[in-house]
Picture (tube, rainbow, N blue to C red):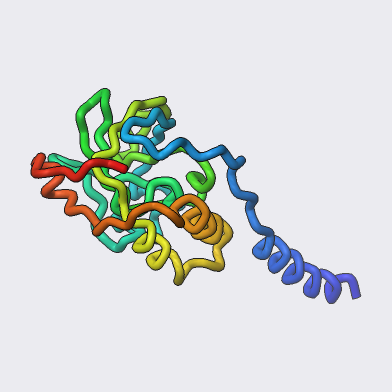
Length: 189
């Protein structure tokens, strides 16, 4: 009789554990949309346990890039929509926001792609001044997230796109290669 109850209890506990939703990170008030911002930066790599299933691909489906001209970055697309291009003031490196992650949702943190764990660990977490070279397109970011809208972090970013970008002028997606080469950058809003 005890074994029979155990057989019924184990699957119930398993399903209860699987349905438990991890809470989102603590929400931070968004930064003003200005040309220069000071943000927390962290680093990530494609071999981290939460990124392995995606391989070396971004949320846009493009390969993760680490130079020489352009680098991939992940951010909350409600704050820095997909396609946002920025320069790190400390290194001069140019990054293209083409990825997002659960831990970035509702935060003023940008995750910089690094090609290895050692490079990721060497970066650590730093406060950095960035210069926005081109804002991404919030409509493109919103539409790209729609298939994953049932995930809480994606739903939060989609709400923030509606909230923070509803009156912003819409721009075409930038070409990160042209921007990296320094060709005519439009003024940031």
